[in-house]
Length: 284
Ligand code: AG3
Image 1: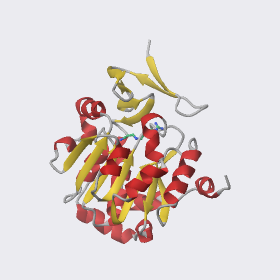
Image 2: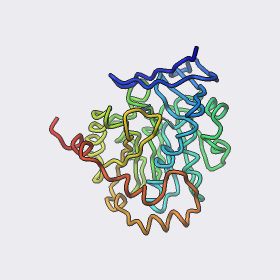
Image 3: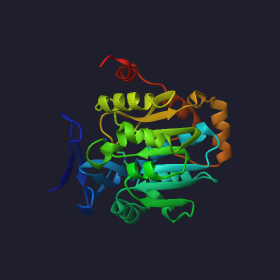
Image 4: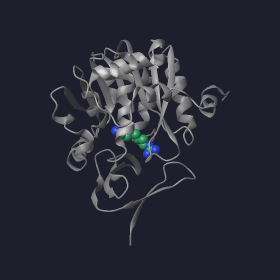
C-alpha cells in the first residue's frame, strides 16, 4: 500500500503526496521534520506537517526570493536570511559575485539534514566562505545584532508554531533597524487565495514602517492554493518599478543563470490581480 502525506495546512483543502522512501521522520528540538521521496517533486521536506521545499520546484521560490530584490536594488553587498535553513535562498544569493550573506535559522537539524538529504537545494552554499551561519531565533538575533544588511529575506514557515513571531510588528520593526538605507525586506507571505489574513496583516504591519509596501507573486506547485505572495518593503519606491532594460542589463552583467527568474518575469510578478488588491484595501 502506498503511504500518503496529507497536508492539511488550510481549512477545507488537502494536499496529498505519495510517499516513496522516507529519509527522515522525527521531532527536532523545535518542530516535526519529515523528508521523503515523491515521484513528481523529488525529495520533499515538511515541517510540522507543511511542505517547505521540494527538490524539483524549489528553484521557483528561491530564485524569486533572491534575485528580485538583488537585481531591483542594483548594489547589494550583504543579505540577511532569516529562516531558510535548507540553504536554497542562500544558494541563489551567493550566485552573485561580491555578495556575502548571513543565514539565521532556529533549527540546526533542518540545516544539517537539508545538507545531507537534499544537497542540491543548498548546492554548496553551506561551504561557501561568504556565508555565515548562525543557529538562533531570528527575532532575538535582529533585536541584538548591531549589524545592517542591504536585503533581508524572511524565509519563514507559515505563521503557526515557531514561525509565527516572524510576522509580528515587533520583528518587522527590528528588521527595519537592521536594514541599510535604501534596503529591501522580502517576506514569504503565504498563498493569498487560502491565506488572505496573512497578506493583509503583513501589509498593514509593514505599511506602518515603510513608505513602499507591496507584494509580488509566483506559483510554486507544491504550495497548494495558487500563487504565493512575497512581501516587499522598502523606503525607496523606485525600486519596485525598475525599468525592464535596466533589469536586463543587471541580469546579464551579473552572469548568473536561472530557470524561472528573468527580467520580464520580475516585472510581471508585481502585477497584482484584483482579488489580491482587494484583500489589501477592503475595510476590515
Ligand atoms: N518557506 C516557505 C514555506 C511555505 C509553506 N507553505 C505551504 N506549504 N503552503 C519554506 C522554506 C524554504 N526555504
